[in-house]
Every structure is written in structure tokens, then in C-alpha cells.
Length: 375
Length: 255
Image (tube, rainbow over all chains, first blue to last red):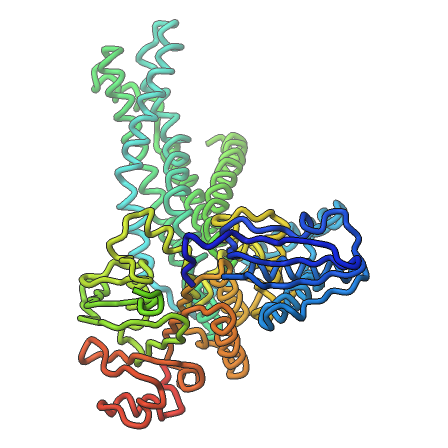
């Protein structure tokens, strides 16, 4: 309802008559404006009764309902009579409803004691662990069924995912690996130059890239790029009840959504890692040529004295495992996502953190194992 | 000119496009103050698109929308913000902010536009929830309540600032008949109490016949209004048989 600008502001004038507080309400009452508040109007007075009148009221909305409602509440608490019969009928009706809503307690109290919090957090952690194991189990069952030929595999989806996570990741993987080669060359040269062994930069970069950095860098790039995308995609599918739609049709979401994605990553990661190796070596070669005056042929020959097929194999094995880690983490977090907008965001973040954490842990385990078996 | 003569909403020559497709062309109508006005029509005629164009969520391809005589379409950013404060929109699915509790959802517009203290805002939020039958649900998150409850909470949020105009997008869709009628009663109560102008996009015939003061019907073939009038008038004898069909059939075509 339009309020004309010249309407006088809301007012509540009081006067006491026979110990009864007479409150005359007037002017335009609007939520967005400044309105009197009951607590300020009554102050410290303890009248024997309260009477509300609305003689010069031009316009009113919920702000007046709140005022009258609070007045009635106050009277109830102070056990004094409250006379609202002179108010418009609608107003006292709404004020009554408002006063009633002040009396209902929220059904869901969220404040918790520390003990409750710890208990809930423990329960939550156990549920998480259970969900994780269940997911691994479902993946295992789906894989067994797949290998046993009892369930089809969605190759079309898989190929599409391979393109998205493999081919389309080439530019970013190229850039990052090349720059890793460059930085390794610079930092290697600082140490090796002391011994007059500049040429060993080639050995350093060759071994570091093939055994460690190629797979690691590709893994981290894919965790941020593909793992997060999987979590967000599956998470919003879940929020949209698409996962439920698969389940009621008897189609396992794991077979339908997870396996093609994980398979795509498992197949593309070794290729990306080898590609990253090449780019890293190229980066090192460029710096060696530009700043250390080592010709590329000499660099290549020197590198081949130490890097052999076993180093490349170590990198490729790691890459496959990192790929599976990224795929499983992304899909797991997506399936665990809460059914709301924030849930999807949390799932994506959590997928990246989980992937990188497990990549580093797996890398450490590999270091110990490969050392033990002498690879 | 007296205030009564200016319609609360005036739509003139509005053309709406959805993506590149023109859905509506040359739509003109006006809504009087304190009127319950329905925009009806079958699924896919562009009812929601029209609504989105009226409230500024989409820009009209042509034409103008005026609220209380002031152009909304041609208003600058500040003017728009001031006008947005005066109307509420209740979305089809509630569109509650999922990271906030119901109480916080309703408190947000009050915090943005009023200088009321926090405890008072919380009390108003509780009152709004009680008005839509959700007393006691203040501390719940939208994900913890049912679809119908979300919808009612969305209505409570639309009413937070005592808007002069409230738009409803399919208020009764997804609600059981009893809840839907209660919602209708609530809409009438809001109008009667505060003189709120109410625009409802709906194809719920029971609601239309029950509470509409006037309505327009949109049609997909003409890309515009095929009928305008009160429900009884139109049901009794509209020029277009589609209108009579729509209003007298008690079942709604499923999507």
C-alpha cells in the first residue's frame, strides 16, 4: 500500500488515568521506518491496567502488530488487564496470533554440550568410515560382476570421460610439467655446479620426473580438475534425486556412474604421466641449454645412462593408482554430498583434499615398497 | 489524480522471450490495488516467464511494467532497489536459502531493509512462520522439512517486509488439497488485512474459482491474452471456448 511522504511518523502517546496506562497509537506504522517500542513506552511504570486506542492511525503493518503483541505479552506477564477493544478488529486478531507465536518454543534446539558434540562427531566419523567401506565394497562387487561378464560396461560414457579428463587436460598438464622441469633444473644446478657436475642435471631431472614428479603432478592436476568435477556432478545429481531414480530402477549408481569415471581416469593417468615426464624433461633440457650450455644431445645421452625402463614403469604404476584414487575420491564425495547447494560445494572441496591426501600417502608407501624390492 | 485511479500494476505491450524464442507478445493488462489477480493458462504458455519479466528477473524484449504508476522497466538501479522492497515473490519450490534456518531465511530481508533489533526480527520471523502454519520450525534447515513446508516457508519470507504486492508462482502445486485451500485462505486474509495486491500464476482451478477477483488467461497459439475478467463471468460465457473448458473442468491436465 503506498504511503504518502507527508504522513506523520508512528507515535504512541501515554497518559495515566485512574492508574490505567492509556496508550494512543497514531501516525503511519511501517517496518522500514522508526516505530516506538513497547518496552520504551511502558518504561518502569507498573500500571494497574493498560488500554490501547488507535484514533489517529493512518497506516499500519506488522510493526504495529509487534507493538500490540508485545504489549499484550507484557500485560500477561505482569498480570494486569489489557484492553484492546478499541483497536481495529484485524489488528487485535493479528496481535493475538503474534503473541501466541511468542509462546511456542522452537522444536529443534541446536545448542549442544561438549559431550553431545563429541558423541555426535564420533558417530559421524564412524558413519563416514562405514560409508567409505561400503563404497569400496560396492565398487568391488560391481567390478567383479563386470569382469565376470554379468554386467555391461558403459564404454560410451567411459570414452567421453576419457576425453574430458585426458585429452582436455593436456594444456594444463603441459604447462605445469614443463615448469616443474624448469624449476628442478635451476635448483639442481645450484648444488651440482659446486662439484662441476652441471651435466648431472640431466640425471636429476630424468629420475625425478619419471619416478616422482610426472605422476604426482598429473595426479594433483587431475584431482583439482577432474576429481572436483566428478564430486560436483554426482553431488548435484544426488540433490536432484537422479541417484534415487537410478536406484529404484535397480541400476547400481556405482556401475552406472562410478566405474566409467574411475576406469577413464585409470586409463588416462598413465598416459598423462608419461606425457608429463616428456614435458618435464624438455623443460629441464631447455634450461640446461640456455643457462648451463649443455647441448640437448649431451643432455639426452647423459639422462639415458641412469633412466631406464624400470623408472618409467615405477612412474606408470604410481600414475594408475593415483588415477584410481582421484576417481574414487571424487565419486565417493559426490555420492556422500548433502542434498543442498552447500553440499555440492563441500563435496568438491572434500574430493580434492581427499585425493591429494591419499596421493601423498600412496606415494610414501610406494617409496618404501619400491625401495624394499629394489626397483 | 487520486491514488485509487492508478493501478497497482500496469503492464503495457510486454513481449517476453525465453532464450531466443518469443513466448509472449503485446501483453497488456492492469491489476488494481488490493486485488487478487490470477494469470492462468496451460503448461508452457509462458506464465512463469511473464512473472519473471514483471519482477525484473528477466528483461522484457519490448514493453513496460509500471508499479503504482512508476515505470519499473525503465527505472535506474537505485529506483529498482526501492521498488523491489515493496514486493514479495513466492517461488514455485520455495527457493529458500539452504544454508540458513527458516528463521534466518525470513530475517534476512528484515535485516537488509529495516533497523529493527535482532530479537524483534526473530520474533517477527516466528510470527510469520506461525501465520503459515509452521510455528516451532524456526531452527529447522530447509533440507529438514517437506516440500510443502518449504513452500509455505517461502511464502513467509515473501511476506517478511509487508510488501504491497505479492507474486505467487504456482502456490498450490505440490500441496495436498486441504493445505492448498488453507493457503488460499491465508492469501485472502493477507489481502483483507493489509490491502495487499496479489498476483498469482496458477493452473489450480479450485483456487481460481475460489479466490480470484479477476484473471487473465494466456494462450500458446495467440502468444498473448485470450480472456480477461472475473472467473464467474468467464466460466459463464467467454468468447474463447478454451477458457470455458479450462475453468469448468475440475481436473488439471497432468504435466
